[in-house]
Image (cartoon, rainbow, N blue to C red; front, side):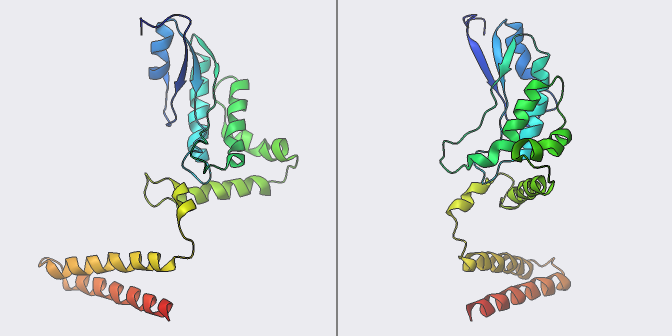
Length: 209
């Protein structure tokens, strides 16, 4: 870091939620380098932004940056380069980033949340932010694993019911096979596995009719 020219400006980006970002900020501050705090709005790879991550990341990172020597501003970042991101859905975390920059210290999302409908839509009807809250919750429900982003759904066939039914059949069948092949498995467990297998298979047969 000592080899960096002193007129270099660092874009110091970190998008994960941390209790403190000092470990990332202080090395550049001690080196006498100017830097931008660069949180993210967590819209990449998602049908709808991960707002909870975005506001926690932005609120804490900006607050830590305000008290760090050599921080000259904020680059609040979004990523739309995969072509699947719906940017207009990102205004909530983007504007939270603006508010965090204007205010000193840690910005509380609750105050921003309560005023967002009036400031953005020109209407103080709380149903508007409740809609945002519903979308916020729905995004996490579309991920198949904790590491799976939700925009894979752009490429899934919403009418491919047989794929979901096949997945439902496969899990009980594996459990049933595991119980049958394991001597230590109780008879009650074997009956449970077999019942689940039969019930799921019956649902698949009804769907095919």
